[in-house]
Each structure stands twice: as structure tokens, then as C-alpha cells.
Amino acid sequence: MDPTQDPGIWQTLVLLVQTLGTLVVQLASFGLHWLLWIVWAVWWLGSVNAKKTRHVLAIGGWAPAVLIILLSAIVWSCLDARPCDCLGFMTVPNFWWQLGYVSMLAATALICGWLQSVFHWTPHEIHFDPPARGHAHGHGHAHH
Image (cartoon, rainbow, N blue to C red; front, side, top):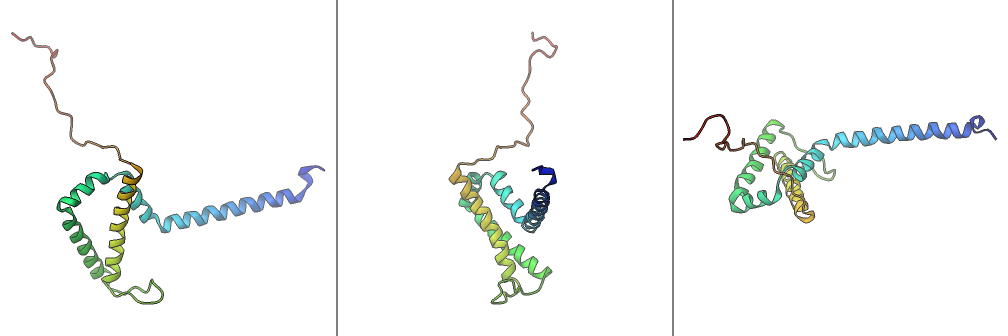
């Protein structure tokens, strides 16, 4: 039997392409919905040195971090003053759901730092300071 004459194969291929297209659209929609969380996690996993961050937090950097979390939630609650019924079974009052959201972002950053230490991932250091200039000999003048 000639495969080009069999309509079942072509129908199956068209159905396969349509299904793959639907899968790509659904994955893209899922990725766009979670894009900020994904970028946040990638940043903390690949760009922040958890060992140095842990040291800074241990010597007192936790206090300004907590203040930033609180101030972010306060400002957000003033800009978007509405309760959240996102849980389904109860309504979370204004400020408290913003505080919970910002706290989840901070917890995600800490979890990413923990993952770095568990898997021994350390991002490469990037130095923004120009290299120190030394006195190079051989630039045309003679020493007496």
C-alpha cells in the first residue's frame, strides 16, 4: 500500500502538529503567567552569591532586609488598597496579602540560596572596578 495514498497518516500528522501547537501555546501562557517568579528565581540562583549574602545577613543585614519587606508591603497596600479573595475560602485583608506576597519573594530568595549551598553552585564573580595600574617599564624613558 502506498503511504501517500493513506489519509490516516496525514490526519495523524495534522493532529500531531495541532496538538504540539496547543502544547506550545499552553506552555508559553504558563511561562508568561509565572515569568516574574521565574526571573526572580533565576536571578537568585545564578547571579547572587549565597555564601556572601548569608554572611551579610548573619552580621546584621537581616534588619534592613526585614524593613525593606515591611516598607514594600506598606507602600503596595497604599497603592493597591483592596482585599484579596485569592485563597477561595477566605478574604485576606489589605496589607496582609501584600506582606505575604513580598515575604514569599524573600523566602524564594532564601530557598534559592539554600539550593546554591546544597548543590555547591557559586556564580562567577564579576569585578566592576578597573584593574590597578602598575608602573610598567619599557614605556620609552630611561632610568638613571
